[in-house]
Image (cartoon, rainbow, N blue to C red; front, side, top):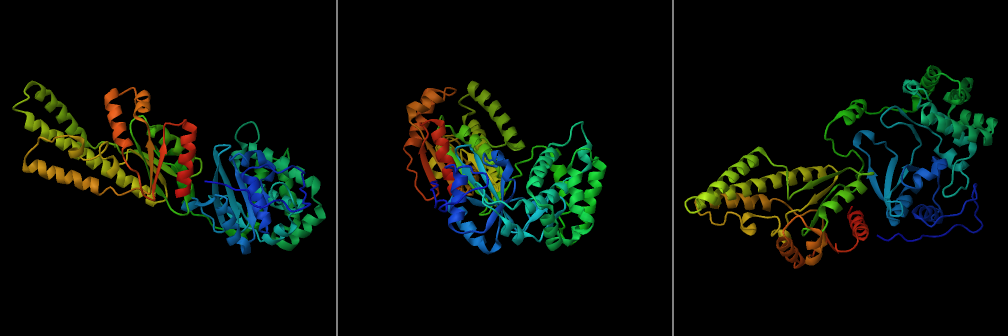
Length: 491
């Protein structure tokens, strides 16, 4: 994926803090938005640049709804993709865009607000009718425009007040968020003109203009104020903002509790707006499939809902475990009576292969359902026509070939049927590796065995629009860069 520099700063433009423009993805985004003349501003969080510039926080942009289509086009051109929060956390008018930033190894997350919503998605949140006023008041700053001090003061105090809770009283020290919000509010208060603040509140949010409620909310942020008083102030503010309340899902609290206590839960991040994807990583032993799949999941899991499975070693069912036990007994007997029990041993070996095929299909079906729900699913050793020699039916693997009976024929048909029902994934990442390199890497298996399997995969001709073949003999960082680019392009 190539991210090109778009546009440049307007001639003679200045910023409020006078800082220069860095040649990174955020700078390119800022320049592109300026070039297109999009009406927007960074309505909160601009003072935390160290966090969101390294992918550790969101870039919250308030965008004029009339420029929504152009805004989306600009972000798509820069490699951003829209992502959806879990259904119970989605807020109409708020859209997330993600793009990988290789220099920090994380995702840059742009939170586009086409309506100014304050509060938490899982709690009460309110739509403030001041979008146009905030946008009209915006001033140049690096890298994005920001609201004037007056409107920034209004939004910061309201947002901070809505966060007060009795949990803030737990512990000896004040909550970290409260100290940060207080410092930011005090800094803005030095620039804001109180008469202008009161006029803006009276004009756009008259519900809180009475008895100077905004000033009381600001006072509640200052040191020396009790938690009980802060919570009481929050409740007064909530009652005044009732006309702008957007009722959240009543099941949110139960979901949050379940998310904290549920065992073996899968990732609960965002999902691509284009839908989930089933991604197969295939290759010979020593190609680094497991290492790459784990690294890909860790990379994607920073923002997106993911899952991972190993179809070569699927979760074994009770039937498979029983068949495996019987096979061990049959192998022991076959070693002592090779002639009379040869046919029985072959049948038991074939039955074990059928059980493995069933486990692989069930694991595939489970992963396919997760992908259908929007998750990005990464599967190692995925059964494909091209790699049947490594993971496929018993006839290709050389298992139970001497079994000759109607029962054996029936079991082979069942096994082939399971593999036939495993459809092609949305993306195949084929890791090519030289057989000699594979033998040096894979020291836990016999050298001849590893070399033969690597040679078999080296002869495969990978073709198709959904296939990306790459040399896995290169340094790991280079391989991962290509894998990440291929995955992001496919989403």
